[in-house]
Amino acid sequence: MKSNLPNKWFYGVDSIRFVLAFIVMLSHFDNVYATALKHSSHLLLRYAGFFIANAFDGIAAVIAFFIISGFVIHYPNKNGIPDLKEFWIRRFLRILIPLFVILIIGSKFNHPEKTVVWSLFCELIYYALYPFLSMIRLSWKNKFLISYAIAALVICLVAYPDIIAFLKQTNVNFEGSYRPGAGYFTWIIGLPCWLLGVLIAEKIDALKPVTFMSLLIYRLLAYAISCFCLVGEFHLHLSYILTMNIFAFLLYKWIQTEIVYFKSHKPNLILERMGKFSYSLYLCHPLLYAILGLFIKISPATYPVFILVIITASYLFYLLVEKPGHKLARIINSRYNLAS
Image (cartoon, rainbow, N blue to C red; front, side, top):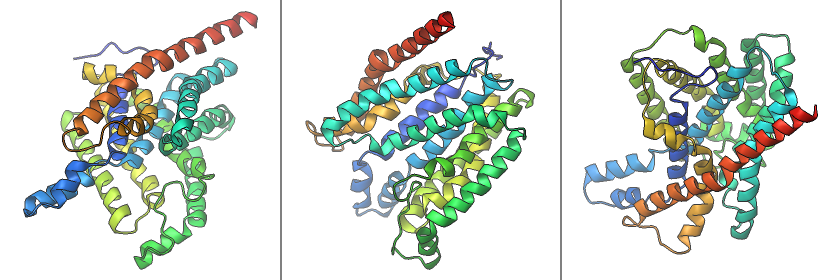
């Protein structure tokens, strides 16, 4: 069934965003089911516990978010940014207004949101750089290749202890993180992942339809390799900083296939609607988890309660903060346009 797509948007993208935000949320929960099953006397249940414990890779989901962000930013601006100030006002305010609110509330609870805001700071840098990258007279493919080479060099320099830890299979100086140390270079390391989304936007209109079987294969592959990366970080001394920029190529193909598929197929409307508040879910869940934990102890019985309450509260945050923030950005832009 052919979808009536708006000129600057694609169905299915919001669904992916919600799924990714949901994975990030679950990756930050204490998985009580996995803990219980791993201590079972039955072998199959122990295997099930091991699988559940490694079923949700939040870092992999963040890399997928980077790719989607690059696609969403570049597609409507492929032929140039009509108004640079308007571009920056809208993009920055959409992130900063909700972020500012969460940072204020989080200060009362030792900033649990710090587990996710690092990626938002990277996004802000990419929004700031994008117009200048657009002015460079090189193909986006060449810009990607240059950024990938620079990121690889930075990884070799800042992740040298992780490289040695993997080669020698030792915990000595092993960090395992995608943002080692203070994380000052993370935006450089993640930039080629973001530019993969730009590459999708460059060619998406010319790509031929894909079958559901192709989509399913990419979904399963992306999920299976994400689980391997999580296992590798915990059990093989294989740091995220060594795996994610390679894994990003598979995520690129998966996300591209999703977007192409839903150009000609109807998406799940519930997931599409829930994807509208995926940013609020991504941003709010660490703080909501910390606050809820003050009143309810997480257990097999309360685990679903945590999930439902956090999703509901994130939706309310979207209605009260994020959505009005979008409106404010439009108002500021309209006043700016009138003033100019």
